[in-house]
Length: 421
Length: 80
Ligand SMILES: Cc1ncc(COP(=O)(O)O)c(C=O)c1O
Ligand SMILES: [Zn+2]
Image 1 (cartoon, rainbow over the protein chains, first blue to last red):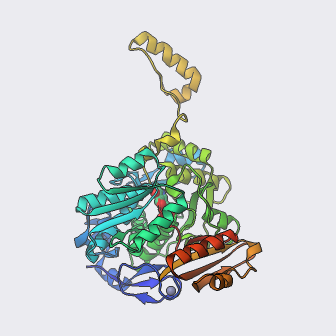
Image 2 (cartoon, rainbow over the protein chains, first blue to last red; image 1 turned 45 degrees about the horizontal axis):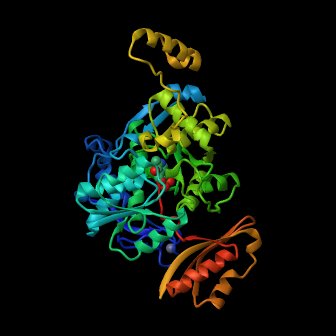
Image 3 (cartoon, each protein chain N blue to C red; image 1 turned 180 degrees about the horizontal axis):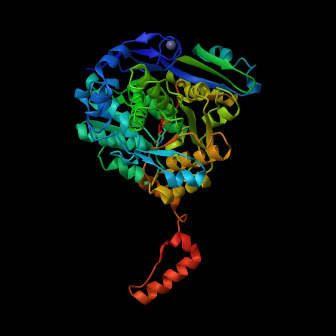
């Protein structure tokens, strides 16, 4: 049983049937899934959810697809970890990390793809497609493989090796597009219009995007059915960011949260691809598209589809946005790993670096209970850390040489870093 | 005939130029404006261009020469 009722234009409110379409014929605004929240309220409960699977399918009533079509690699219900050491390092009382690095293809994209592919199968598509700087490509390829569907995955020609291999291994038709970022965009818009594929971020985008709401559902449930004071999440298209806020609001609408969420939403971008954060700092909703240039390739989107809506969420919640340089991104990755034992990709570095800036500037008060979303795993972007880590102690295999080398190493990096005797 | 939905972004000095009018006059294109917003810093217009694909390409290239930034109407198709 599913409870979606229509697609609704976010600009003019016109409704459309639940089809593989994404844009309003009248005003060209983006379409979003509408639900019968009263029926969901009747169908779901905290107990029912608690008895469900330990994946995002525990929220099936809130997802715009028939779970009978699901392609289940075990996505979601990822750990919410209390991060006291990191909190202390940056000056917060209470910090939680939503660790989405542990999803089946090591990023939160498994959430959106789970919903997209279920809906695509329901529509009768036989092939999945996407255009991606890596994480989405990995997830589409893996889910299509699990479902036995064809996959067409378009990536820029110069991606990190981990992200290329992380798609190729599942055997999709992997298309490495030569040319600029704009060229990839142009080719994919053209191809999407002519092929009978479920293009996850084009013709099934309204369904796909809803998958990110499960992050809010999980955080609220893991906090004992309440919303935090503050969320900090990375932004590329801005979709994830807006859907986390939508998810908290919906939980209240269907009675799973007792009080309306008061969460302030803060978005994080890389300085080299920061159209949304820059617009926020200039106090305008009209962002200027950019040509991305940052080590955070997963966030390198110059013309964000949901940029305007992300800025609206910041205004509505009293949140905001911050940006981080490439050096700060690497420092953020290291800080997260060294204080909490979580190895995130560059997007996680962006989130931690921006969180740090927001606390330092006073934009986030130290007593706000904060959740930071760590959305992708670090092994995909090891290039970013090349020559940036403390070198290993290299020794011949004998104990005396080891003692000597360890002593030297300690004077080099400081006793603290080398750890106890 | 083809249709392409695009977003034009104008820097302040271009906002007063009749770029979209000239697109319709100087190319075999029908221009159809759907959403727009202009403030002091920047203006944008979402519109549909209808015509032969090659003519759409020529029209967009000309607009870019005038200094307009042209993007897909609903944002980038590439994602993270
Ligand atoms: C690891 C990671 N975090 C965050 C994002 C941001 O997602 P969105 O496009 O929804 O803003 C992406 C992808 O785009 C990503 O790959
Ligand atoms: Zn509309």
